[in-house]
Image (cartoon, rainbow, N blue to C red; front, top):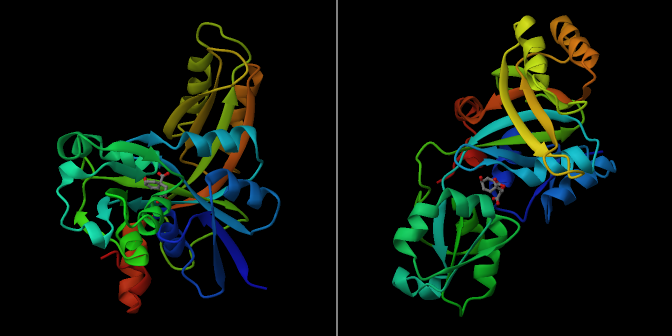
Length: 303
Ligand SMILES: O=C(O)C(=O)C[C@]1(C(=O)O)C=C[C@@H](O)C=C1
């Protein structure tokens, strides 16, 4: 049986590109889903072996929908991570390819993509209204389907190819070093060829109550074990204003004795700890180099 991978679709999203880089072998079937909750829920119900969703962007920060769905709605382990370069392009229906930008009435895209291009939109499309949709490729598909409207989409180059749009402007994100972190959820996983950068264990820590120094004690437990933390993010518990869960990424394997010791310490302060996953992390650069060496760069060429 072929392994199925669910991803945030439709075809042509950045998540689709990341999925192809993560699962390059022929044995995998990629299945697009309409939303991030759809991907995570379907993997949680074992309808797919794996799922791929975005979790953090270098410019805009956390993809809070992913975090909140992992915290509150599903119990699917994170089993891998890929850091992938993001270039946002402005695309229009070919019927309007000569339309001045000042005459564009509407910009469609995913909220993360819009947020990455705020400065550009203010400077070049001050008269356009923003319409948020479920993904960048969803925006591109809508532009294709609404040919008569003077609208544009923001999204990946692959979306312009798939939906037959004209690229008006390339790389319009406000900062050049734009990367998104994608996670694999589901079964244990490792890239078949690329070298991993490091291992990571993601934890969800809930403090017993709000008292002075509570978080400090948690952090001290990791410091005592010389465990490197690569990220701390707080998300509302959704139960009471001002109460939070802490998402902490540690650069260590989940079964390492030092982590075990630190977590025993954390639990002794009355904290609740849930392991969201222990997994290998990859950078797209390393995957690309390997595939180009093999002479099969087809799936990886973004231009
Ligand atoms: O809409 C897409 O193309 C996606 O894959 C989603 C997503 C995100 O949610 O961060 C992925 C990468 C970019 O940062 C913009 C959008």
